[in-house]
Image 1 (cartoon, helix red, strand yellow):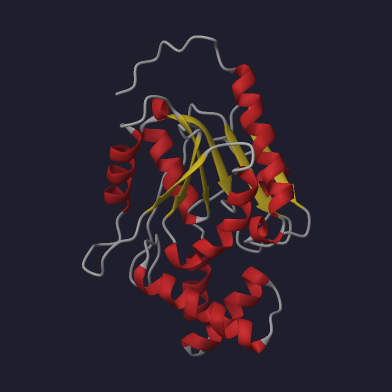
Image 2 (spheres, one colour; image 1 turned 90 degrees about the vertical axis):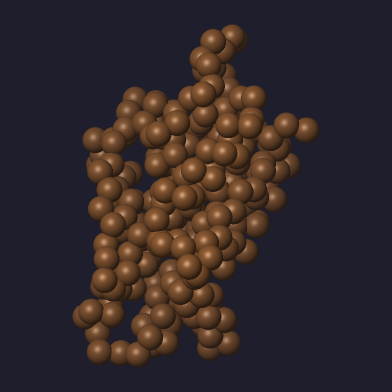
Length: 244
């Protein structure tokens, strides 16, 4: 069976929060999984991830729907801007008007503002990202966030902040955010940014937080499937574009 969509993950320690949505999508679409894990000796750079993703996708005989949450969505966006002929559509979850403002950036901003230890700051991040939790669950989530900060690809650190010029892309886009997500806010839904084009779609999940696709997987799956169906209906009957 040939894949129709590709889920990107550059945050392996948070991948468990993607599984519910993936299960829902896989009932009607064939969704493949692509994960990038960098070694401790690798620099925090998107270039390697983009090259490896392109190596994977150029072996496919047709464009795929790309989908990613948070930083994984940013990687998908960068790839779609460089290789639009390989992307059938792009779905971004929890990506705001300024994509470089991730939960990592909020964490490092808190570190500069509050005289607290790392554990306390990460516990605060857990409340912001997931809402109130039991002490046991808070401890488990703090551990996962700490692993992400220490070992995974990120745009931000205490010493460096990546800047990226956002521009419109050719493939159709669906942007989904949570109404209660303090990281992204609702600016995309209320004020159309300059990089959204005619035909792009926005959807806000009521009461959803940063990981709203874990909290409400069925609602999110319905929105994504509707978007993919609309792209299929708009597609020409013959594709003359040459993949490179």
